Length: 349
Image (tube, rainbow, N blue to C red; front, side, top):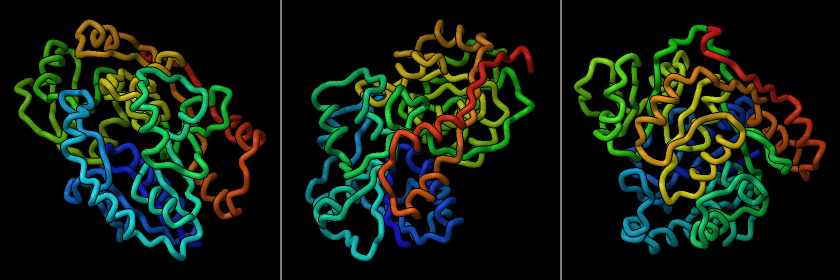
């Protein structure tokens, strides 16, 4: 079996999900070619598992101080390059074409009249899930950015819809938690503003991971370069994660049992909706702006949720090997029946 798999590379969440899928594909002996778009080729890191992957510019949304900037996005669009990349991508000879919200692959498949399977969180928005911050432009982007013939949506809860749990690694549950250790991942925010917000809380240790590494000037704050291995090591024994409201990182935090404070990107419907879902489900706290009072309340809140999700990547690989039959209610129900949710308290550890 040969598969072509396009991955949106703007944020690290799609790439994290692709790593998990790659592991299961290769374990099953499936030949997969990966393509990544949405960031410069030299800005990808820890990509060894993807072997001879390819990159293209693709399409992406630019941000400015924690907010999607439509002006910068329009300025940096290269429609001629995008069309050329779409037309040059040859999908002949592949048994399946998959897109994780990656537009070059999706539109190349559409142009070549090849069915494409969309796997990712964005495809959950085809159904009735918590949705906030939308506008006509955001709705059209979600619909046409990376269209798929069949969309397999992922979310933390099914909301009574035909969607699946997150695709994440299923690591061992951490038994030793450093109760004052907090991991901070806010790559679209001003790092100086982040440090200013964290600096008064000297009873906590903050481990920031950022594209721009600066000297914090405080003993209780460490600023680290982006590193998958380093980030995972710090997250594993931490008490919580303070981040933007990306889907994949929150999924990992829930699986590991970390308390969550999410600050969604302004004007980004998906992240605003994710924050709303976390709040509705009681899985995390949210903030719209850099608010020290909200941060303080969250830091001293010992409540957290730990969710054991099944190996959805393995389930989907087997589904593809079976010929990708129609996913019915029984299939969905059987997967969700294996999910285990625990409400816990840090004071018990």
